[in-house]
Image (cartoon, rainbow, N blue to C red; front, side):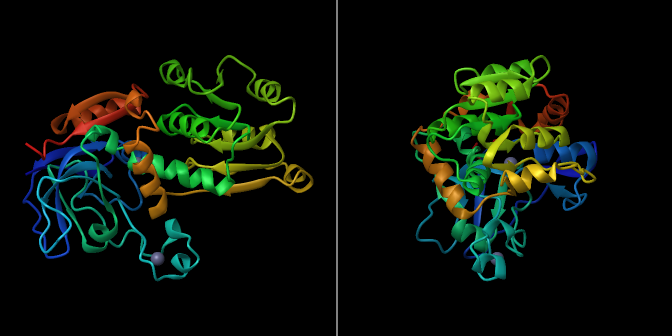
Length: 344
Ligand SMILES: [Zn+2]
Ligand SMILES: [Zn+2]
């Protein structure tokens, strides 16, 4: 079978590799489509501490069952989405229901990775991380399960509720998804700031206020849109320390900030400590998702509550993944989906 392998920054190739063999309790999934994530682009660009040369890439998988030995539930040809990880359920963090902090989150991973014709899903992941995708749903939409789940996890960390003013900093895929989720939860107004005209165009008609950070005074616009109070909830969805500083300035007294984007390794923020103290600002981070977020994400996508397909600006065959990643490093396009051809 064909699979993409990562050999170091700037070096990825589609190679021939043996089809993984699956034991009872494991599942072999024929990958129809796998979304390209910012993590894949970052890994391609400058490497990743946890992704070793020779590994596969890709974790936003939509496919069909190829083999499910010993399973009463899964039959060949059933359409599924696959989560990239599930928690162990028995460590300290799991006992606190902080599943995205599970000490064993990455003990089981997809073999070799989503950018592959076939992928082996190990037992724990096969038991808990594989969900059916209704036939009426575009398989490419299934690739949004993981990114939407991460957004839902961030929303719950700051408790976004109906009527909250919500300010999203960043016009990437995640910021745009968050604007749509904010509207779904009836946040009002939803304000989004960005810098890329192609991406901001997708925010118009979703967010109530779209701010061009390159041309407008972002803070003044947020204050104007929130009656001078600042936003109840702020999500930082761009890996820029200046955006985190903006969040602290633009949040309302008693409001909450979620640092969603992973920052560069050496990023340090000089905080106005009195803002945090006197104005009782809640500053949170969020990473990944819990199983319930993944289930909720697939439910929203399956019921057509989120229009994720409008974010797909290109879909490419597996052989062209490297070129697609290069384009994304130049911020061309919004969401790219790789068609892996496993269902042929
Ligand atoms: Zn992802
Ligand atoms: Zn655990």
